[in-house]
Image 1 (cartoon, rainbow, N blue to C red):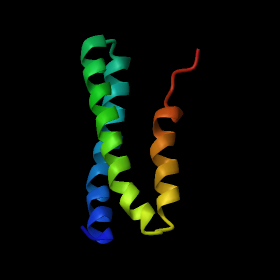
Image 2: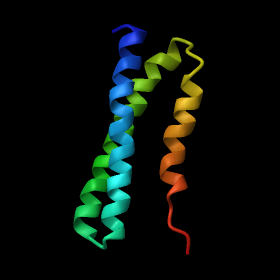
Image 3: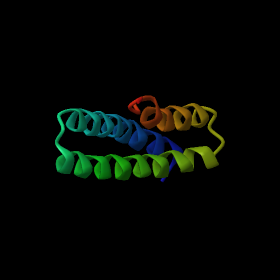
Image 4: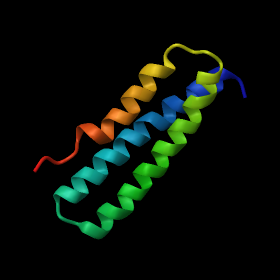
Length: 83
């Protein structure tokens, strides 16, 4: 696959990752523990798929990859619940 195809695939996977994390947080906020766990597992898997789609572009020396990784890993950290 070419780098352009990896980037295009990443543009498909990125919104899915964001939606999965948002759904996990919303489900947990509704106090639905079991569905929240299932959605959390899905969110982690989609995030791992996103890492796999960004890695080939990074190996090709694309400069935008650093920003994508930074953003992708900040999403779970930003929405942690404070006690």
